[in-house]
Image 1 (spheres, rainbow, N blue to C red):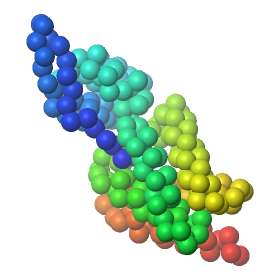
Image 2: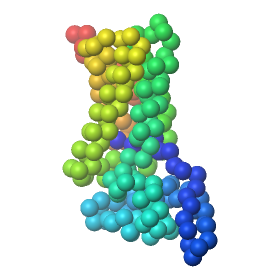
Image 3: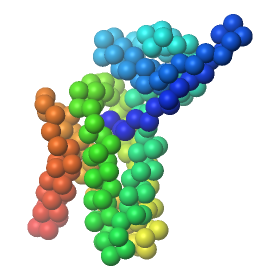
Image 4: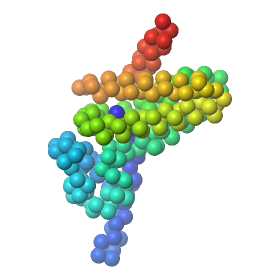
Length: 204
């Protein structure tokens, strides 16, 4: 799945002793990487090629991303923090699942911004076992953050963990449906429909 991307507004590099500002370097690197991953394949693409396509240096790449995997997961920490904050900010009378639902609305807003980009990114992730594993790790961290947010609201375990896992399952299923569709649709509505279906299944 695409996680919301937070790009730096500018990147500073030193060239022949002078300071040069490169607007949107992080964004250019993300777009260049995705283009190359789609064209050549993830494993066949190097950091140097990504940097060249983006018009920056390899050093600039590594100021933005730890490795070429992380280009596809840019903004995941910000998304995780935003969802945890949505759980904590839910009204006091809101139950555990209600707080998770509030987080899902935030996720839909963040992730539902660019359907074509998300479809391309997901195709790259699904084609590579290393990237699929990385995505599972990121999702697990989000689930842990949701559960911790619920505990801070006074929700005990195992209820906090179970509610967080319901949120993660809902997010994965709804996002998967959304990116599988050739035309953009309302990701928030898909989140709500998926959560409703899950509630119906568990009520049987």
